[in-house]
Amino acid sequence: MRIGIQLDYSGGFVEAVEQLRNLEQAGLGMVFVPEAYGFDAVSQLGYIAAKTDTLEIASGILPIYSRTPTLTAMTAAGLDYVSGGRFTLGLGASGPQVIEGFHGLPYDAPLSRTREVIEICRAAWRREPVIHQGRHYRIPLPAEQGTGRGKPLKLINRPLRERIPVMLAAIGPKNVALAAEIAEVWEPIFFHPDKAAEVFGPSLAEGRAKREADLGELKIHVDVPTAIGSDVAGALAAVRARLALYIGGMGARGKNFYNDLAHRYGYADAAERVQDLYLAGKKDEAAAALPEELVRALCLVGTAAEVGERIAGYSKAGVTTLSVSPVGKAAVDPGERIRLVEQITHLMP
Image 1 (cartoon, helix red, strand yellow):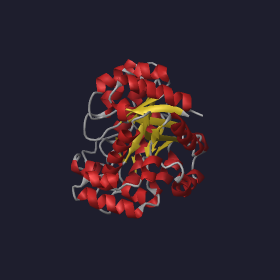
Image 2 (image 1 turned 90 degrees about the vertical axis):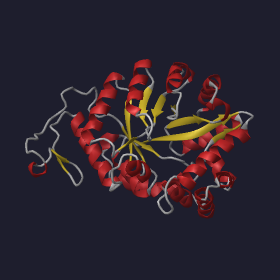
Image 3 (image 1 turned 180 degrees about the vertical axis):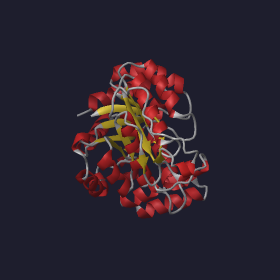
Image 4 (image 1 turned 60 degrees about the horizontal axis):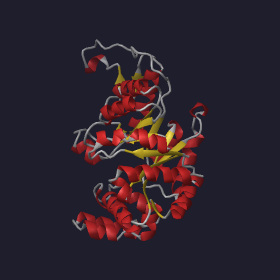
């Protein structure tokens, strides 16, 4: 199992990148750059590629709606080239709050759009003339919809790899099945290793039954809030605040994917209460209403022995890359962050 880390999109990026070489020496294998509605991930990934030599890089994630499929293909090929073949294209649907509220685009048909985007990307990476007549994307644009002068084109540059790994972020049953069918990597959020087989197993089996052999085994990347040491209470409080934000406030009532996941994990009553409190502006109460059992299951916080036991659980559940999100002292202290990665390296099975 490989160790990854996700950079914080809220600030301090340059300083964080400067530390990546030290983290790499401590055992870090991969870095993920998210894209919400702050700085774009692509420019930052290019900066990381120039500053590192062996560290694998990934978008975590690029929303499928905010770029054309061919621009996504060009971007991935460019990042793979400048990094020397170290790039993984992380894609996801994001959510209607960001897509409609920030990008001004309709949040429609995420499943079929994702499939088409990946099909177009892979054709472009093979340097085939891009010809796609799908439900959502028609390339070249039909004459009746434009000037009629469009013609099939292929990438001018030859990509370093014609099969750049694709990682799909997914937690809904149909999305998870799609990831297991067509992606190299699946990225679930708030992965519960003890309940994963029950909650995600049927969807994974459905997708794997349709999976092409040349994709290889499905890899699983999981991002986990992590802290080892004495400040357990402070670290758990940070985890609670994040969970409350997602389960309670990341989406409208009835349209919150993370609240739905808490239901599927068996915490329906608690999920409803957290949402009620959060939407009423009672954020601290919402965080306090989260069951202790759920909070601890979705993080790696505790003594080294406790965290080691939880890491073994993630490994048993099939996780191939464990991305640590430092909480507590390691979130603000660069030295503590290096020490945390070193500790996790030694605890790996």
